[in-house]
Every structure is written in structure tokens, then in C-alpha cells.
Image 1 (spheres, rainbow, N blue to C red):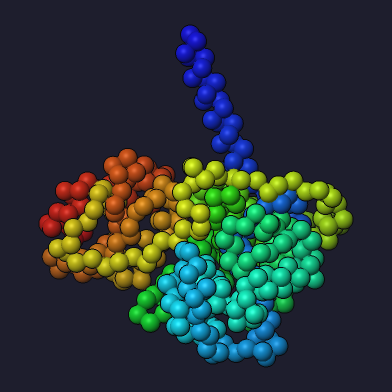
Image 2 (cartoon, one colour):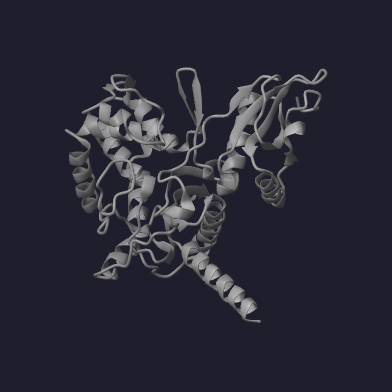
Length: 406
């Protein structure tokens, strides 16, 4: 009896801890009016993670508008930029790239090396650039935000709030319309590499056109989202989701509710400015959403581009088959969608686009490989619940040269 009681209390404590970590801060606003459509702990301090890069690229856009730089301006990669931890696009010291490519890589791939290249192009060093970022934040009305780097890599003093991120996103949408296409791009080509956007919201929500994802263990899974429907554009900010699928589900609910509220809103709703007046003098936070021991990587995990394997290559571990497609770009997009949907459930998986040679059929099969048996079966369960095709394959089945999907 005592053992049963202890087990029950342990389960209750675990559930309580998970519930606390599942809590998130959020805000949804109308882009045109600034009216707040929903808010939850919108003035609680939070670690921004790679949402930081929204301010990094804003300063780059402003330099372009002022004529200080051009999209074709050639930038040289410093040792500091090249040494940034992942996520990155693998820039080497002394290598050059255009400002256009650096901006795209910073947004689409959340590339830390590209973000530091931008910082060093606009200031003497990243520290000076971060001070400029904070000063610009104050000018925009981001009263609680402090930046200490251009990337969003962990720094205990680098903090923001859901309201401040809504202010930044609204400024980008209203004041930088010429550059919004960067946030809506789905892929970036560098040399022979085609790198898909890591922002799954773009392909999984009708009317979506940006803006930025973010993740560190301490921050949890963040997202600043925007979408347009029936002539209305709204902005959704979510800070601190527990995993990728949780972030996707939460932001969908927030945005759906936001559009419904915007359609029937009347009277004089609170605005972003109203939240400044009512903000607490000593805001709470920032919390640690996911303890390091339970999280793993300290930076935003971005999957590598799917690789094309030949029929005689051995595929490791268990795998899951995600379907077959006529075109490679369709196959790659399916791989990225599935990985974004699975999040931590596919941790350690390698995406493979396998050229199919079965009979007269020609095309590409998509797999995630390198999984354990329980991972593969669990991942398929998640995808099937979302009404997506999935087939778990053991090592022998995975490498069967006579398989129809080969």
C-alpha cells in the first residue's frame, strides 16, 4: 500500500512539473491596429532564443533602406563568425557571401554564423551591435527587451517578453514591406546546396507568411507567427512551448482564435501601448522551460537537408517510410514537414530521400532512419494520428533491395 502511495505521489509530482514546463507566454495582435486579441503572461520576461534574429535583420533592412549597404554587398566571414556553434550554414573564415544570402540564411536557417556576419558588417563587433539592438528596441517601445548578442545563443541577461516581440513583428510588417518576402521564402540555395526553411508554420497554416522560430533549453520552443486571411493580418507570439508539436498545436489555436476575435471585435480593445502602462515594475522570469538534463542541445536544432541515398547504401537502425513522390523537392518538403511535426520524437533521426527504381516506377521515397524501435513505432503513431502516412521498418525491411519503395 505504501509503495502504491509513493508511486502515485511520484506520478503526481512528475505531472505537476510537466504542467509547469508546458506553460507558455503568448500574445496575439491585429497588425494594422495593434489591438490585442489575446494575451497570457505577455509581460513576463523570457529568453528570446533565435527570435533575437528578428532585430538583427531589422537593423540590416534599415541599413539597406538608408543606402549604407546593398543586397549585393560582399561580406567577409570572420573567425568569430565562423566559430559560432550550430545552427549554422558552415561558413569558413575568409569566405565571402552577399548581404542578401546572409539575411536569407539568418531567417530561413536561423544560422548563427550568418547572423554574426551581419552584426560585424553593421558594427565594429557583435557586442557593439547588440548595444545598438537594445537601443533600437527602446525606440520601438520594447521596454523590457535586452540584447547581448545577435544570434539568441544563451545569455542570462538577454531577455524579452511576448508583448515586446509583438511590437517588433508589427514594426517589421508595417514599416518594412519591401523585405517581408524573406520571411515567406521556403528555401535558400547556396552553391549546390538547397536548404529548406526550418519554419514549419509556413507550410502548415493557411495564409502564413512568417516570421521566426526560436529554441534553447531555457527558452523552450518559441515562435513569432503572422498570417493573412480575409484581408486581416494578425501576429501571434508564443514563448515557451515544451516541444515542436506542442508549439505547432498552440500557435494554431492562438491564430485561429485570433482571427475569430478580430472578425467580431468591437468597442475599444486594449492595445500594445496599454500593456506598457499596466506592465509590472518587477516582471517575473525568465523561467527555464526545459531543464538542461532533459533537453540535450543548447541551441536551436535544425535538421540537415535530406540526402539522396543509392540503392546499395546501408540505412542505419529502424526507420519510418513517409511516402513516395514524383519530384525530389516534394519529397524533401515532406521530410521537413514530418520532422517539424515530430519534434523531439524524431531526435537523432536522419532524413533520407531515396531514389526509387522499382519496376517502371520512378520517383523518390522519403524516410527517417537511425531510430530505435520504440522511436520508430512512436513516431508513426504520432503521424497517423495527424492522418499522415507512416510505416515503421526494421533494419532488414529497411535495407530490403526488393522493397516496392526502393
